[in-house]
Length: 180
Ligand code: 5GP
Image (cartoon, rainbow, N blue to C red; front, side):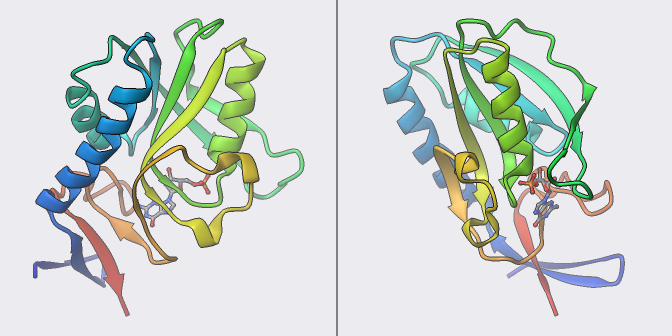
């Protein structure tokens, strides 16, 4: 098993590149079946989702689709007024489109909760969520439960395959879990 040290923390490999590839294929098979006759718009949430999105989209052999990118930051301090700030705003018109949001990981679900509301307000006909990882124990927003999930995980902090530690290690080819 591979391991790395990053900023004083020890991480051990948890999902290998071939295990990740299986998860991606399983998600792609479901989207291929569900969107065969549609022309969905994939909205990839930067920065973390770019690696998963690149693999997932190339596995969608049966789906004619478009892809666009957004970058957001959400404020956790004031949960009730929790406002979504678009650092890279949505460039594409989502009115009457079947939207699939692509995320690296869904944790509290705040980002997805707010993004879904935004897409609906812009007139999207449907909004689904595909994520590489999902922390079900951490979910705080019912409507943020992802529709397509690569792998579920408990509460541990993970890095690699797009997921960062203070901006670094997104380029690791596997997903690593922090060890105490
Ligand atoms: P949410 O809005 O669902 O609470 O947060 C989702 C975001 O939190 C992810 O896009 C990611 O940036 C960050 N995040 C949550 N858990 C982890 C983790 O275990 N590792 C890393 N690197 N980021 C995480």
